[in-house]
Image (cartoon, rainbow, N blue to C red; front, side, top):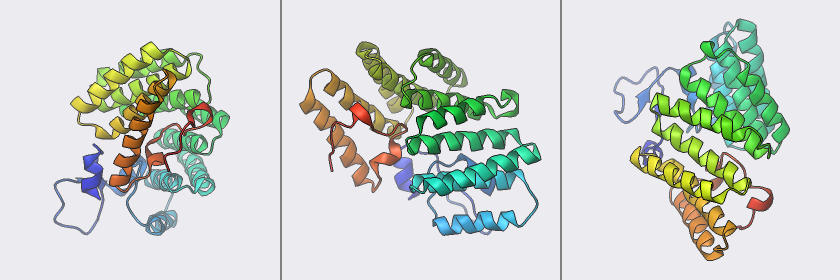
Length: 280
């Protein structure tokens, strides 16, 4: 599984308190940071739940709050959105009670993501706005940037495009200052979606090209799935349906070859005018 993930440019984390010889290809971290940082968790969900249950029996802690957020993310990625929201809500209450601002922000971002997956755009925006109210000096720099991009994604998904270009420019500038090529590719891809939805196809094409270049240069093939998919939407919007079908078919084939669901890579679920083709 680690080899599959790395083939898509993912950072692979792992934890095991008993393993003495650790694989070189997996970054070893503690349980709390692993659960909080993971977008995809390759464990049996029941085992993950058991870990959090064990932590709940101890004193309130930041590790438990991070674990609850990680459990919520795992539930979200398996489509169990109501339970995911409940776990993220518990994490938010716990983080607030113990004075753990980073945990509050992580829980709020997760609640925003869950709302996006559930098609509740207004709630996604509200949670993301609340996450931005957590003092930035209490957050790791990388996660402060994640908070900003979460709000941008929620606004675009909810078709609230006013102010999005400025917010995206801020996110892109911060990613460039940090030297994070993957994050730059992510933000540029979001700018493509926003520009396309706003009818700015020339700008969308330019940003899509830059996102692709950064993804290739930075060794980030995971982002290329979204880049190719957005290329398909641009072809469709400019009267080239055959090329759009070719690109969308390539995206589906790439995901299926790796045994992955295309929906896992869509930060903005397809809806409305985007739902133009069902390749299944």
